[in-house]
Amino acid sequence: MKTYGVILAGGGGTRFWPLSRKELPKQLLNLTGKDLMVNETIDRLEGNVEKDDIFVVTNHTQAELMLQATSGRVRADHVLAEPAARNTAACIGYAAMEILLKYGDGIMCVLPSDHYIKKTDVYKKVLADAIQVAEKTDALVTIGIQPTFPSTGYGYICHEENKTDNLYFGVRHFVEKPNLQKAKEYLLSGEYLWNSGMFIWKASTILHYFETLLPDIYSCLQKIGAAMNTEKEKEVIQETYSVIPKISIDYGIMERADKVLVLEGDFGWSDVGSWDALEALYDKDEHGNITYGEQVHIDTHDCIIYAKSKLVTTIGLENVIVVETEDAVLVCDKNRAQEVKKIVDVLQDSDKPQYL
Image 1: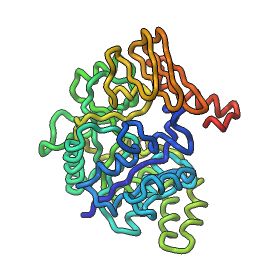
Image 2: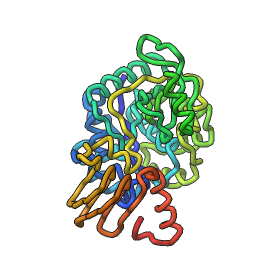
Image 3: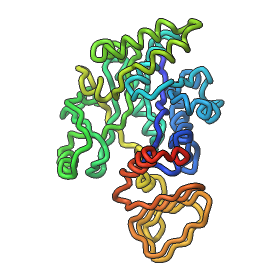
Image 4: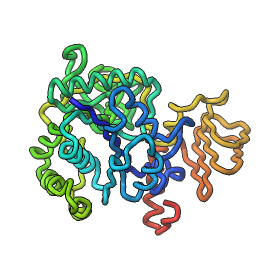
């Protein structure tokens, strides 16, 4: 059975403001010093997915930049532009319908575009195993990350005690971001994995779950599917997409499906969700700082300091994030990095679109 890569690249990356903006979000940034995050995601599929079978789903406002960024890696007609942001269920259903009706059923590897993975070879092996399990079992398969600390920033997957075929666990249930005490309990139990947001399944299987669990969305997908390969395809997508109910694939299907399996991954993963995640990407200096750009520091410890265009100087800072771009500066307690998206909300409410 053919294997397809489906890369989700429509997010705004608000927790990486002011570097990440609406028209140039995190997935289109080079945060690792190697390549754009979306391109690193595409390149990691080599060996598991043929180049012509990779799709990228993005927002219409980012589509032109995405086409430019992925040129030579992804076919132009495989960059699917959503007319409206309707959360992950809609974009995954749209991609599944596109694949099934235009190219034939196959295994979909649904992957976020903005993750960092250190051990690429280990990742590829886990993904190959997941593809095998999805084809053999007709289940919804996900990859859980072996937790290394009691994170309160990730969701968790509770799995059964024993692996089947030495490859996968059955999933008992999903857990939202826990408090610190719960996270410590999960870590000690050995029965929880971090929820990576990576999914592997047949296109026909996920559409069956849409029909069963999300019939309102499925009826919209059917309208889009009926127009595919006709002159009205773009018009129908434009009209239908805006009325698709907003819901994540996790809430809508994964937490309710009756056959979900998880493979364990330990390949140096980070979702690079906020500025403090740079600690997984860069080595610290002798004072515990992570720095990028031109800088001078005195008595500064355990900070993350990103300078885009100007010299940044500090004296006596500790556990602080400083980000400088051409038109904005962020200064933030490192322990509150997850709250940067609140700044974006305030800017939106204050009618300052030039900073978004």
